[in-house]
Length: 149
Image 1 (cartoon, helix red, strand yellow):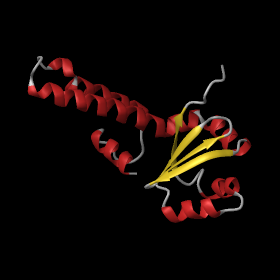
Image 2 (image 1 turned 135 degrees about the vertical axis):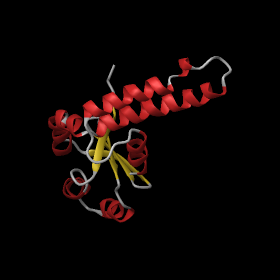
Image 3 (image 1 turned 30 degrees about the vertical axis):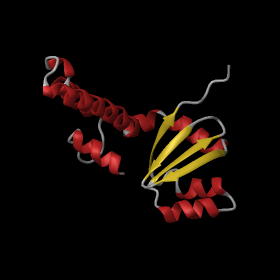
Image 4 (image 1 turned 90 degrees about the vertical axis):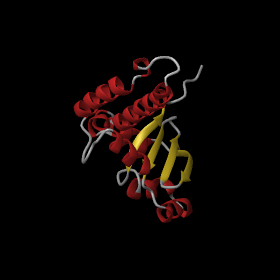
């Protein structure tokens, strides 16, 4: 949640995310903070390089959790959570990362420790996750499926 708030603040976004507005803001921020605007050795160049990396990361992250992106990938997401099993998971802070048997990995934001403990202690983790996690928290696909050679 902290990461989402930080990136929304960087992009001056309040409320729901809109891809068109995000793209426009992204372009303006990149123009403002592009390292090529500074001469070599300029003290602002190093800051601009760091800021431009943060802007790019924030843009890709916010696009991945935008409603339009989630709607476009909803069929794939529903297939994963309904037909695949959980292979691995880890919880750090308020972030729960779940890897599925089909190779997809999703991050769920804002999952409190008490919900994670209930998930961990559940006899049927997949059932618990379907009811209490999958559609209750902001999520994004974090890793692509690994391809077999």
